[in-house]
Image 1 (cartoon, rainbow, N blue to C red):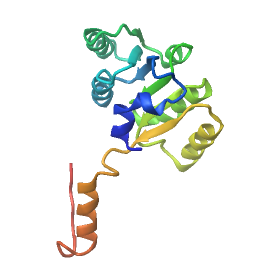
Image 2 (cartoon, helix red, strand yellow; image 1 turned 60 degrees about the vertical axis):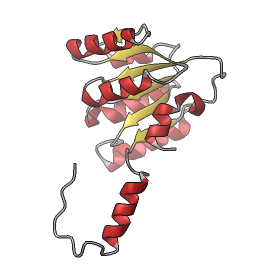
Image 3 (cartoon, rainbow, N blue to C red; image 1 turned 90 degrees about the vertical axis):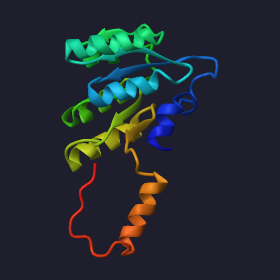
Image 4 (cartoon, rainbow, N blue to C red; image 1 turned 45 degrees about the vertical axis):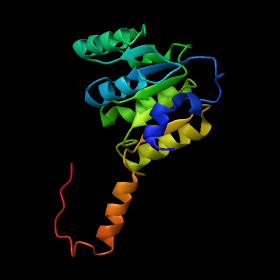
Length: 175
């Protein structure tokens, strides 16, 4: 399952839901990356954005307006734990600064949510182990966003370079 498949196919992944039910999601962090994720989520059939969280009031207001324009009616929260307290949320998307990933992911798993979190998982190896342990004990599905990890063009390029196709690489910069 790739990140793109997860975002585009959230209804299929969350098999606990009936095909006739809407999947209710919350989005935590709607800055640059989170705003992109929100736009993609709003395109998925049978997914209802019911809550959005961000510390920046203007960013939060803008995200709420975008969701409302797409036919959703999200509650807006400046505190992520208030969003997680909602029993009607099935899945949470987390696109916050890295130092918050562990705390937010573990908190969402602890309350039984499915979680999609942007990479990296956490800041340290120990924090990653804590998240993995929390995921093993959780009811929900956990996925991290490693975009392009499975992209066939990228894989072919890496294979070509590793095979010496461009000679000895002394420096590489990519965007």
